[in-house]
Image 1 (cartoon, helix red, strand yellow):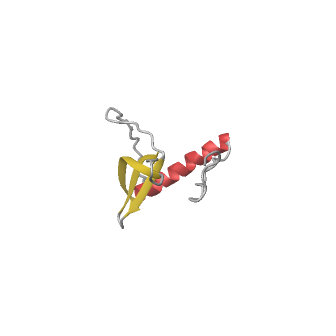
Image 2 (cartoon, one colour):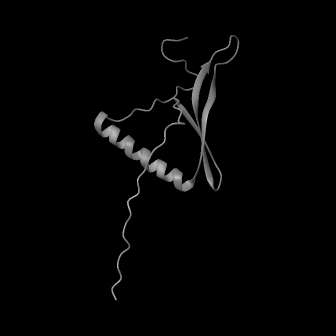
Image 3 (cartoon, one colour):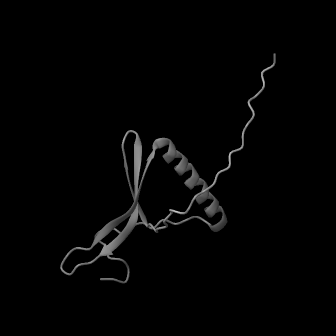
Length: 108
């Protein structure tokens, strides 16, 4: 008796965006445990108070906690979309922070 391969069943995916919120993030902080990765998304906000050293406040807006398999899928997906973007638009240049002892050009 010949074995038959199980039939593949198609599954519909419906995306419910009714409770979704959209926020902008210019920074991310990560922390990890053996089982999970924690991603804090937020805004770096430069602050200058009279008589004090300049500082940056990291205002956390969203925290995502995921397992390592989900994090790997996210990393692969992000890598693919960044590669596609760069193929169409050129390499994304990352800004390098100025050394702490140098003021940005035009200041000082």
